[in-house]
Length: 360
Image 1 (cartoon, rainbow, N blue to C red):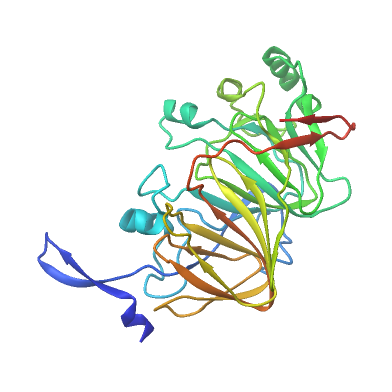
Image 2 (tube, rainbow, N blue to C red):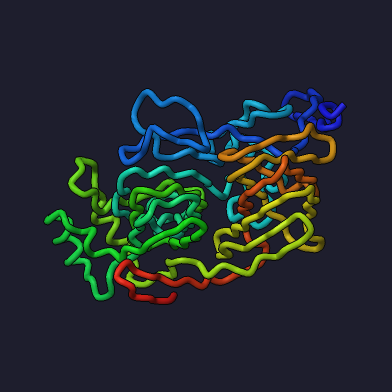
């Protein structure tokens, strides 16, 4: 019954054939695993797959080529559905009407990532890319002493950066800060940055893979020094986000981790069923639910229930007005979306490893 209720009539004017096209419903996506030199072969506790080849560094949860695993749209990619359904899937706040706006990943760094920088929207447009890359990192786990490099030390010039790259010591020019479980780090486009080993991170970013690698600790990989220095900004809003106060309800806790012009990320804990409804008289955004711990079941009208657990993602189309989320027996997850009104940059601070506190 649910299958037929999720279909609608579709007329193809080119073939004059009337067919039935599936309506949208919460989409359970298969993650894609990407090998990285800095990755690991142990993805527990989120993924138990056996890794025989090169280390895995990233699990893409909402990549363009991630496929749907449930319902009538099973086997279709997120990119295909974005082109087909447009605002019905993505909402009316997305800058590109037929392109999925957010790329969400799990990162498993065993070693340091390269020192890199991403262009902003304007810089990306100059090189023919659809958007820039502002991102944020939610720290799921962190070993004692785990660090990230966030921005250049004050007063550092581009000439000093070029010289330090040649002398294989550029990491000394970064602000290295300690990270802990539960931290949210905001990294707006133009920030020179690096991630150290010893943490598991959920990255939410604009849907772009444009990366300029400035420095790689002597590893024999291509560098993009000229492009990277052009994209780098002396001052950005990067830092640890000052999180909002939790909103506590019966069986539900919600905390806003970051609100920015490019995305909103909220953290939820559920111990009893909760109905999610879209606010009336506002624009709509696609919702991306990322399970961190526990298990949950999504019930929505005219669709089969969807179960997801830690490391799995469900995309809730903008056309889905409400759904019930039932934890079994508890569920911790992130919800990433686009802002439905104009917002500014988040408030952040940077506590360096040396103890210097700065604000942005």
